[in-house]
Image (tube, rainbow over the protein chains, first blue to last red):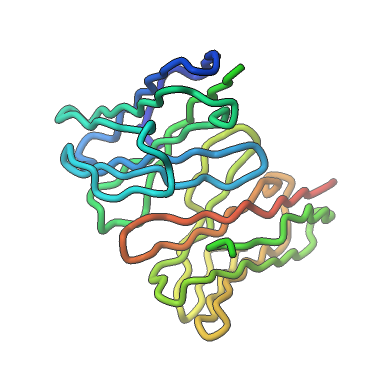
Length: 113
Length: 109
C-alpha cells in the first residue's frame, strides 16, 4: 500500500452544492497533487500544493480550490457542483515537487445528481 | 490535440503471449515518462519509469523515442494478473503529470 488515504470513499451530492474531499499523504511527503478521473479517461491534473502553497494548476475553474496542512493532510473543495464534476478524485503525494514519482490514494468517487 | 494519446484497445491476448502498445505525446519539452497500471476501480500505481536508452523490469520493456515522441510498453509471457489498464504518463517541466486515457489489456486463460 502507498500509505496515502482519502475520505470519504463515495459521495453523492446535488448540483449546486459544495463538497470537501480529504487526503492524508505519506509522512514526509511535502507535495500533494489532486486529479480528476472521469469514467474511461485518464486522470486530469487539478492542482499541486507544496508546503501549504499552490505550486501549479491545471485547466480547472476557480470553484476548484484546495488547502494543504502541516500534518500532511490536504483538502479539495468544489463549489457550485455541476453534473460533469461526477468523477473519481485522486490525490497523490511525493517528497517534493521535483520528484515525479507520485503515490496515489484510493480515490473518492463523487456522483453529482 | 491531447497532450498524451493512447490506443484504448482492448488488447485481448492468451496467457503466455507478447503484447505491445504505444502512446504519443505532443510536447517536445517533456522530460520524464512513465507507465502506470490501473486495475478496475482502483488507483493508478507506478509500473515503471521510461528512460531514453530503454529499460526492462522483468517481463516488461519500455522504450522512448524522443524524435518521434512516442513511448512503448511490451509485456512478454503475459499472465492473467497483467489484465489492467496501462496509463502512459508524461511529466512536463512544471511537475504536472499528464496521463493518457489508458490502454486496456485483457489476458485470457
